[in-house]
Image 1 (cartoon, rainbow, N blue to C red):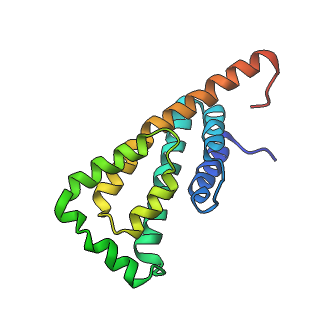
Image 2: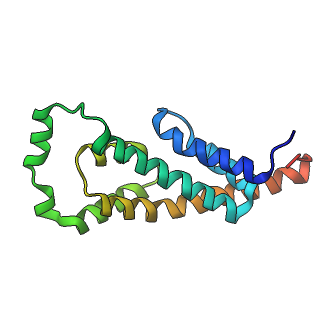
Image 3: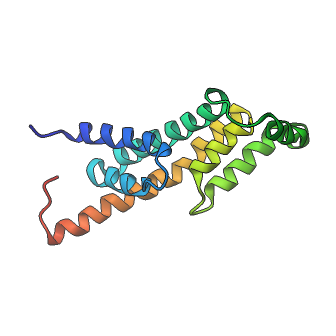
Length: 157
């Protein structure tokens, strides 16, 4: 029994969500594969879905799910009173710029944002907007990479 394109894209999206919790797991490989299997449009949507949902789950796990940060560290972070100094817009711009830097550890940023109690709204918008270029870029790489390889080697998909 062979899986259809939709099944492959579902699995790739699921692995993109779960890769956040596996340090060193190459999400870029999955994103390129999504573009090769689903094309530019469906590959980009699969990448966007996986990146946004995975980062948001990491944020929520650190924000509410796990209370392992020592109280002294938590009080030290809160003592900076960043929200009063930069506000939600400052959080949004800071997160967006950090996430758009090529090679930035976006998974670490997601975990750190939840651990330091960054407000949910600026995190979600920065996460979504910064994931769009990466989603499209890697889907394009997968699609055109597949086209280049298919000229030389016949591919089964």
